[in-house]
Each structure stands twice: as structure tokens, then as C-alpha cells.
Image 1 (cartoon, rainbow, N blue to C red):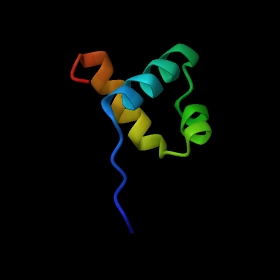
Image 2 (cartoon, helix red, strand yellow):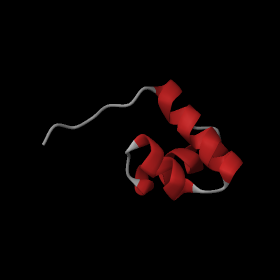
Image 3 (cartoon, one colour):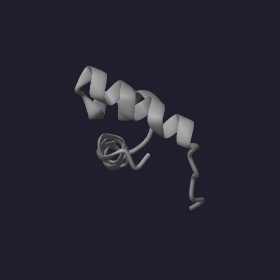
Image 4 (cartoon, rainbow, N blue to C red):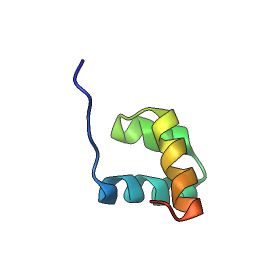
Length: 50
């Protein structure tokens, strides 16, 4: 299985949407990524690491 690499801009966009909607699973389904990834990106965004 090929590992997908996402851009920083994409990660920030999804994290911002998830924070705004307060719903990570909805964003994950919309963009077809795992909920765990969205959660990680949101946490990193909140810490300022992303």
C-alpha cells in the first residue's frame, strides 16, 4: 500500500475546518482521510506545531 503525503496547507485547511465545525469525523469523511490524522493535525495546530 502506497503511503500518501499531504501538504502543510492541506493539513492546516482540514484542521481549521475541524476546529470550526467541532467535528473531526465529518471532515475526515469529506476528504477521505482517517479521523486519527485529522485529530493529530488539529492537536498540532492548537499547539502551533503545524
